[in-house]
Length: 424
Image (cartoon, rainbow, N blue to C red):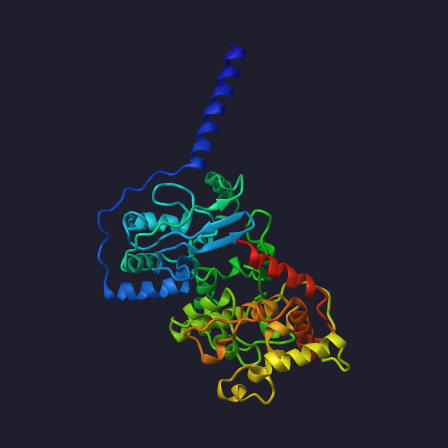
């Protein structure tokens, strides 16, 4: 009898364990819809704004590709992902998705057919959005032109190419509910918090990640690395040695040149162009909330930034290269400094940052022409400047502003960025 009891208990545990594993690895399919419900003009307009706030087109529109048709490669430590088609095409997009299926994807990271979505899709943040915003975003996406396009297959390394493993990631990181207002804060502050922590998912780039790609909750908004660029810390911006004010941050967030800091570049440029499409009040709300984030790091106290009294030989070479390649736009007497408000490079945040990464990336890639201010454009110098020249210009600019904290990893950073750009 005792033996039968033990065997029965083992079988019961096995059945429960198998059931749990099955539940962890699979979700039921949600029935397709023949045609989404029509939406009002007001709902579509609200949906357009929330889609802009969520940066959907930034990831789901590849260069040269159709709006929201996907195919943009996202390079992660675990391989390359290609964003999916979220137009209402019924075969290759989300045209068969109901609102319930869309909401489940936004809140739980589960596709209509039941497969798990990779958390590069920031559903951990979108789950903080209101039901109304998710419904309006769905209505807007169902109104865009359907495009028949299938993204390339993902190239994830083993075992991350086994999607059900995402279920265990979700157990660790999929938490939280729609944000509630903080009662002792203003309506603008709460709006900014909602946009930053919900649809904007800012901490997904501006926070360090752990070994399995989750945000380190103890270091939220303390900065990260995205596509080879530094996503700077958002904490303590108002009280930093090179501080930001609301007007400067709003200008930066909306694709303009921020006085004393420069302009958005790299992965942040398309984000700023999306924010520029929102009501002006939203950009101010984001700025107010971000500037209220307190510095929580306990780093070593650094000496204040001061310029170099006697330039080194490399800095002198950098000064000559700057005069030839940069001074016509950024030099003290350059007409474009007045006509187009181009910034002095030594005043930009890329030069005052602790890492040279963003300055090097900007010199290599430039800033493409866009709908932003004309002064935002900058040509790329990847083919015109070798590593020695890049290092010399960077050292010159750094020494002109902050010689007391020299960049010690210039050559290494340049080589690593060049190598990353050469990868397929």
